[in-house]
Image (cartoon, rainbow, N blue to C red; front, side, top):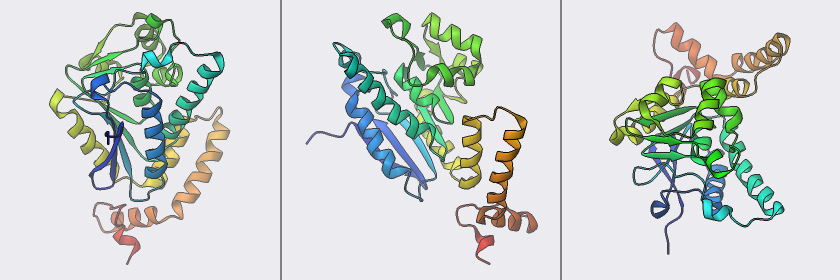
Length: 264
């Protein structure tokens, strides 16, 4: 039996990891890979023990992006169906209420960049290469990148990266805000897992509500204050605040996983 094209494991407490497993194709993303992510995410995001997620690939490569041969010869209906399948995965990652960390090892292109941008943090290697090949292929950027990339790096930088199509190295990715952590190439996955493990200690209700509002900004101050009222009313009545207040009162670090202050 052949190995699955998406591997799921638990590399640290409360952390799930999904890795693309197509080393012979440089982990290119085809329908089977997308469906593998969708299937696993349905389970992972419903598991209350999972408090953070890592995305990556095998063999020191995140992904060469979309599987280009699988895009050839499509009818309009098939092209739309393909994009709709991509968007199911995009929404699952973007709407995940837990922290999502992407490990940009080695080579990350096109669709894989889009996948990473849908998460919360990106760890990249010193000698990594990030590519935006869409215009060179006669395609518009997809996987939500015309929204997520400018949000991360600003509109002028996004225009340059998408239009020039030049490879972006690790140092430049950190400098322009495309990545959050720069490290030695051999350390990328370990650093991503360690970051996810740290983020898994955050209060999940408050983090999820903060993330939702950052991803869907209010259009007016009044709207934001109303959303803030609702979120804070829920958080103030929750167990995480009870733990946070108990930790504050007793001058200790809060533990939002075990929540000892709630069990008193």
